[in-house]
Figure 1 (tube, rainbow, N blue to C red):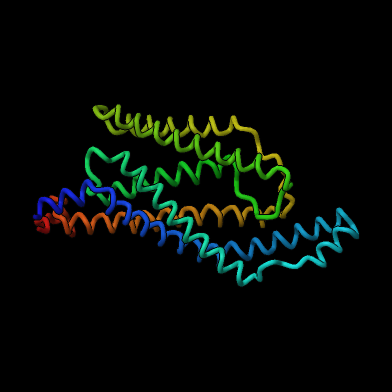
Figure 2 (figure 1 turned 60 degrees about the vertical axis):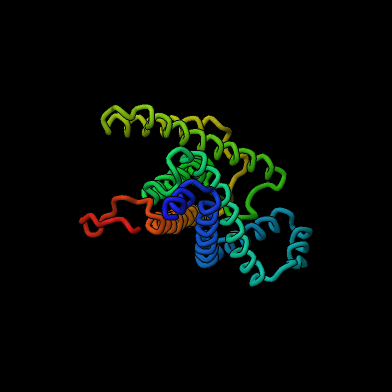
Length: 268
């Protein structure tokens, strides 16, 4: 029975999906609360500045439109919606993460080296879908930019994410192919692959819109935005890796564990 349980835990995608969804929900909640506390005040300032700029450009007509504009939802409802949306996005991210993780580690099992693999996978995901696209297309506060270019900006950002993901997949292939080489060679090759990916990103067109907000506000918003992405993947890695390690302990899939540097017998 123990062997059956171990095989099921290590190879079945359903427990993997459950761990990834739980990690996504926790990461989404943490990110939503982080954005609520730090990003929302910056968004409010950016919205006020954008409305004032529009009113000044359009004179009386725009001023009347701004003055008589009524929000469909109160700010408290929008704040609640922000957290709920972040949790839902985290759950969806968990599903996508589980699929990607299963494809990469299908041959070796899902509980082998659960903790370091979770950290490495989430670090690669952060670089691919958060860091590299943000270096090419830094975040801008909502309401800033021409509404007519929204689709174009979204397409450019999506293209950056695709290039980032392909770059990380290529870096992994390079690392695997150089398995017999010294670590400095392998790490250097991965670094060069990441650098080449960033260079390809900068071949994409630039942001079509100006961002007419004070430089300090823009910088703060971009730092907070990137920080929320970092928090997302840190929490995801911690929860997903922790749950995977617990499942490995429970099923007996981990053969060597270390506590304080001393090996202990696996849990049966």
